[in-house]
Amino acid sequence: MSGIGTGYDLSATTYSPDGKIFQTEYAQKAVDNSSTVLGLRCKDGVVLACEKLVLSKLLVEGSNRRIHNIDRHVGVAVAGLAPDGRMVANRAWDEAASYKRVYGEPIPGHVLCERVGSYVHMFNLYWSLRPYGSTMLMAVYDKNGPALYAVDPSGSSLRYFGTAVGKGRQAAKNEIEKLKLSEMTCREAVLEAVKILHKVHDEDGKKFELEVSWICDETNKQHQRVPAELLAEAERQAKAALEDSDMDD
Image (cartoon, rainbow, N blue to C red; front, side, top):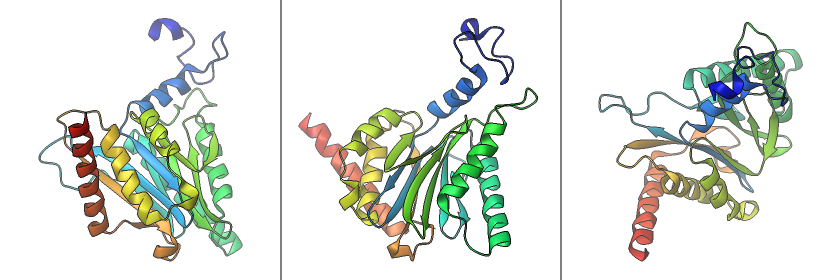
């Protein structure tokens, strides 16, 4: 890769002859090589789910969070470099607080997504900065209903019915496309999200833990962690489904 981008990858302000910005592509690579994160927008809300590798037996369970609260009606999950994702999440929190302070009401999802996208894009415009190596999935439940957004390292902000980022993104997207999300409740989507993450996990022998949150009618339209008992049941069903598929093979 260094041979391809030599002379053109020293700054995010330099285009290659092919019209590429290598620093931005390298930042996207950091996201593509990270653990899988997915989001599902259902008929009654949005589910976010993250796969987190356990890097050490000494690591305290639940640390190194990748899901963050932004406001009562907004939650985000980050893929890629966790510290970069945390900085982007902090900026989203600032934007939500600023909007509420000025206008006296919660920030709409599309406004927050565009503001965060503009902030992230700014780091692709100056030679003294480097692009953020993280993609943020944003779950929102505002007056327009539930919505799922994504902001990538280039600053592009898109809205999805369902999407996945990280190492297992393509296999996860294939599984998401099979789901009838418009007919599915968030409680059902939690079970499917956990099954998908177990299925696409490709780090053989490496222990991992899941972090799952939702925002839906059941949570009174507030972003919350999925109850421990529901997550445990989802993991039990996911492992049983994997064992059944292995026996069939």
